[in-house]
Length: 328
Figure (spheres, helix red, strand yellow):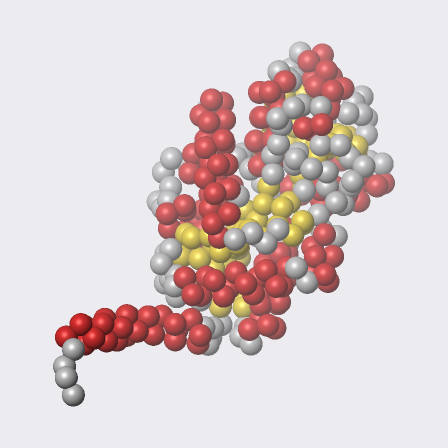
């Protein structure tokens, strides 16, 4: 048989490519073959924790392996996010975290020991979180315009609570202040629960807080929900206007996403994204999360990366202009 050098080279090249690809393909096909942990960088009971447990149960059922939730709170989510960033990029450690870990914390924590955008790679946007502007029932304001006007009548300004400095809830108030000249004073709390309690007791007249938390108190008449911060009306409160309805260009969207340590094999990320999407788009799951004011959004990794890029620039500018830093 006549020897063909060109064919031999092509055959060798094909063999080399196959040898390189097969281990990765094999590992992706075998994954997961042991327990996968999902780190939530906040305490149990919050939106991120609730979502993580729903997703973990769905993924475990569909993939035949246990997915467990590990809460690692502290430093506005930085402790848990850093633990995930330092984990082996093998698909067995994931992070479920909100936008602020990527778009806000790098600006308000100048001494952060890691770069979350570089150290963690997007897997999927999971849900949007409904956030509302609420006031105590005694406050003489029934809409955003009246709220802004009322703030300007108070020599000391009108206080608003939030779950903490640098949270989307806090920045929602700062953006409203910047865009309208409202006379607002931020009161940070260590979580939405304490902020809610003080608004209910009228120690603080208003707050930007998750819709799921305030819904029962709005229904009882103890609080008034003036508006929501996102661009479109909430599916759980469709009659409530958005702030953008009266303040053109205003929008603050809070979200939760899934991430993996950078370097995780793309085959694993692709499969994980597909399984998450299937779980979230299940009608029963959407209904369960919707009841908690969590709107399902199963985006691609690239779409989530672009969202982080755009929102980081926006919040970075606002934080610098208002000299916002994390409480020490």
